[in-house]
Length: 152
Image (cartoon, rainbow, N blue to C red; front, side, top):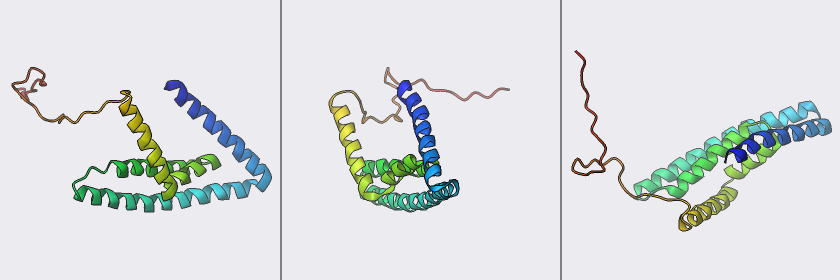
């Protein structure tokens, strides 16, 4: 995992820098900077509107008494998409817009859910339906009580 993150945090900025330099040579430095600033502003506004919509969906799903799992995943994608759009570069902007556009986000959400399902079915990931906050003082596996003692 560390090697993948290291590759991600070194390779992506290097490629972004290369693309920015090439774009600056082709369309000019001022135009390149204008595009970067424009996509950042547009992306922030789009992420805000999509975020508001997903919050509404999360509330509606919860009011129906259902767990908003799909909506939370979409919310995470919107957050990541917004961060990518605020990051300077054309590649990150493209990926950010993919995560913010509802149709592509729905496709990516379906792919992610299928991936999660496969991991769970293969036994590579585990989940628990237990209540972690319940404390049974008679259980041998219960957590010890911490007493608040005042110092005199």
